[in-house]
Length: 373
Image 1 (cartoon, rainbow, N blue to C red):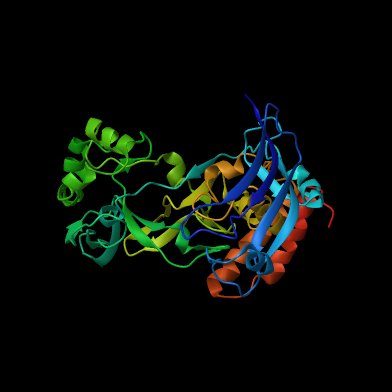
Image 2: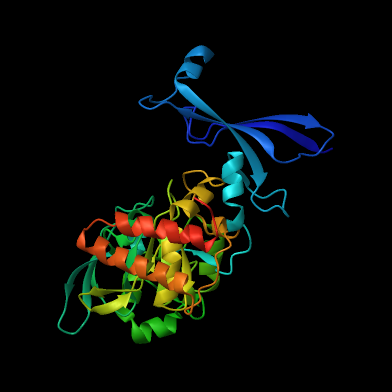
């Protein structure tokens, strides 16, 4: 029997319960199908109001909150079960041009768990090129003992997590050991490791029991079938020369172009880990173009209209319905966006203000989709 949704009240920002959840209220009618647009009410606390207390009467909750009358529609009109886009009618009309098929595939960052094993600190680079490392044993949920040892630098890469990313910049980085072959998407065979990276293999061997008891059943079974140090979510796209990465767990879209970074053992590709999502780009111009688009106010508002803040806010799936025009190196507007993004990256690296570039990007992105101000 179908159920028709009559109204929806979005209380995600209100957080009415003393627990981590995304609260909504629906009224349903049996025997009919939902029609759109659907009336929706978004609740939020007034400025300066802390957590909503469960003992408050309704009158006090109403006094300390604000409610906006919105409309909800499926983000993909051809898929009624797709996420709802919730906004005012005028806002829904304004971003209609953004909706469609995205020619760019978004990926989740590399799964490098347990962090306490694969995340490293470089203590020293020896004259023979090998590196003295220390594992970041206190990162992540698993208890891992502290180890200081020497390994080869071949499988060590600079890395960033979502928390390291800002708009057009990276605040800090750490290092990861990649035991996975991006080309085959399988762990390097043990025979290869013993021949080419025996010290790295010896380091990982100390954590074999932990690595074979990871929480993910899929990863455990993959490790059992291949090598105990198998990793997940790593392919050639993970080490593409140019990538545009953004925070996967956030309340606002913040993106940066990733290429290589100087390390004490030479320039190496930057890996973005599983608290990020990213596009792999063909070249620098395309990467900067995409980064400008993702850091624009119009795209941020579009994503926030159907993806609430938190763990899944910037998941790869949120990009599926963003109809980004494919980069054309002969298009003046596309090149202007790429140049503005490149300028913003340079300024952020110097610690300088980028408000002028952001304003120009916002204007250019509106022109890109022919959106009237």
